[in-house]
Length: 97
Image (cartoon, rainbow, N blue to C red; front, side, top):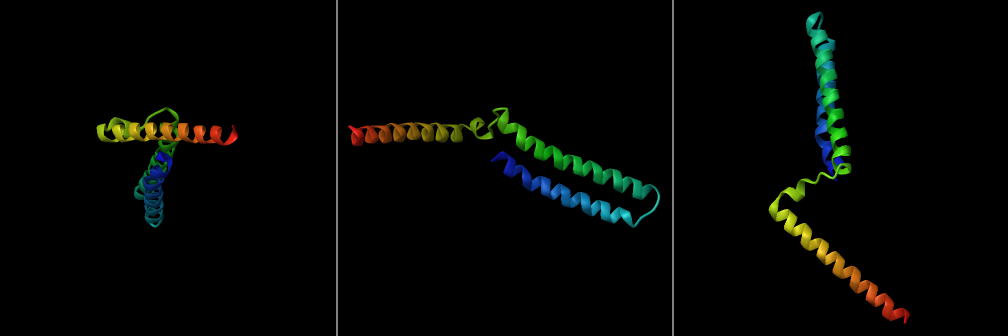
């Protein structure tokens, strides 16, 4: 989920980088160099957003666990899932034997 949420700012940064690159291509001298380096920097930022969206869930970071209301909600959902799993297992056992 975090990867998909990182696609939004990464896409905006890529579009901004191409706009800067396109705008600076018509200029000459130091402005052209500055625009080129600035667009490269914006592309690197877009890549960092994607990298963060990949690494954060793999490292165990979960932004929702830090919020008190969300952690209570997630705990209740986990309890409900466990109860449903137990109920389904008992139903399957009753059908088999």
